[in-house]
Image (cartoon, rainbow, N blue to C red; front, top):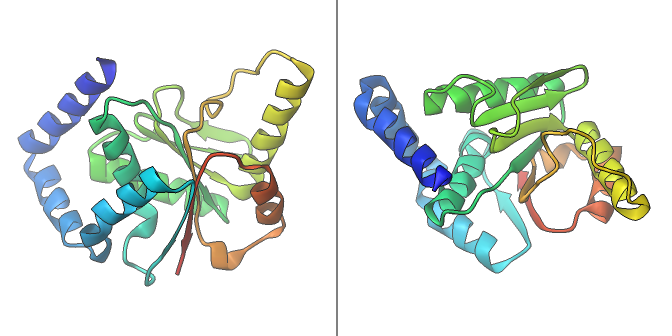
Length: 189
């Protein structure tokens, strides 16, 4: 019920704001928009999905929102964690998506980087660096194995992980692949 209210409020906000309607119309013209159904149906059918597209086709900003809209339309809660290779990218993409949604950073969309975090349990899309996600995954495994109570962390209930800029593969990515169990989306130019 809570998700339906959030979705209804979001749609009312878009319909009631001329700038948001214009932004939504512009987003619908992006190259990736015609693949929205293919992306969400692929996620339903497969645990790992590779999405490759030209630079600038809006993979980074739209795929997390497609997942969120798809899950909310089924009245399912989700937390989509999106990794970026650099801290500045994690912050700027989170800010861009918040802007597209007409929200303040930290509401539906947030970020978590070393020494700084915007967002909380209400944030359904969280951006972070590969290193932050790796530390989280390793810490989560340790708590499960040793039955240590979980720390207060905004990223404990992850439903989908998006690893962006895979062509910039780093040392953290290989280790993350060995640890990740669940829905993994890999984005590449």
